[in-house]
Length: 193
Image (cartoon, rainbow, N blue to C red; front, top):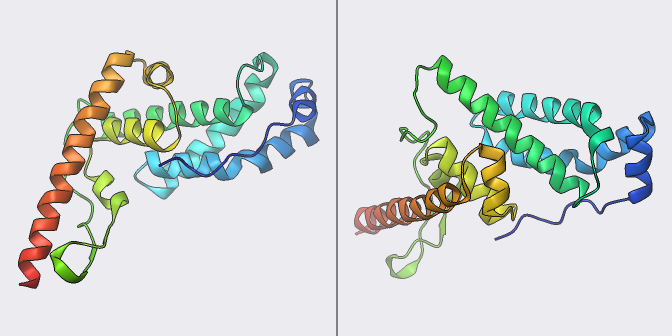
């Protein structure tokens, strides 16, 4: 599952923004804000944190656009900045909460929701809720890799870990999601009997 297409790159707009053109910077913001907000919302647990990440991402864009080398799409570059800012925020919140790691299990924020279907198999599962049961770092790796299409090497750069760490987090997260969804699916079938 890949996220919807990002705004197409406009090389002229990017060149103008690199020169400090305020209208070009605003145009880049307008073109890429929806994707950056989507990433921030998926990686942060609270809407107010996601909004802070969006602001920090575009402030970083303004500070760093002059050094943008044009390697890859601007939207992809902004997505990496957003993910990095989200990770920074999650780390800060973990420190404030006295947690030692973003890899710790948490209590789920809500219960998985199923739409009943004939035959005892859930027709629809709330994947977002299932993802909320993952530790922050695992959820981030799943979202960036499976939805946004980032490579393990890119995720490693964002998280400050190795590509093999990203791969193992993804594998463990997929296994945990399978377990959670299977447990909840069994529970749904039992409660309807």
